[in-house]
Image (cartoon, rainbow, N blue to C red; front, side, top):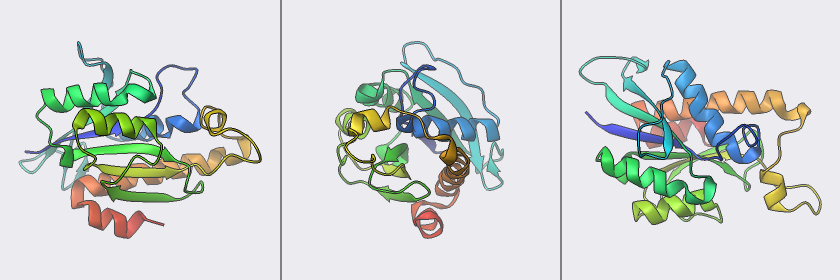
Length: 199
């Protein structure tokens, strides 16, 4: 049985819940809802974790073929996400090849997803922290497009603001698609998920 960490990158607390920078949290919340799986705060782990299984029948399935899936929302704030992820990976003996990071991506328009494995952090502090604590960048990423800030708006202000009302339906659709992409990645591998969801 393989153990996976599916890490939604974001900032903890209600103040940040609807921000663009928190789309990773939104996606793992959707996966927990589907499983269904309950969030808990394991002692000393600095993260909220929901445990489920991925079998051939899908998320929440059972059987001899079922892998363990730990959905993760770090409670460390974005810039130190890797501290929580590294500790969980060490505790559960998870190889970085079985870590999936779900994060916001400025270089993709809203409505676009890209899955990849490895690569740089592209200025994303959550990914940078994960690379540092896992001591490698060789983990899968589900890149959730949020687009670039309009006009002269600073990137920091853009990612730490909510989606306008006109985009909320699109965001809900994309959160569901990103959750579908994670499920397919876990069940059938990165290449098949890329073939279906990379846009």
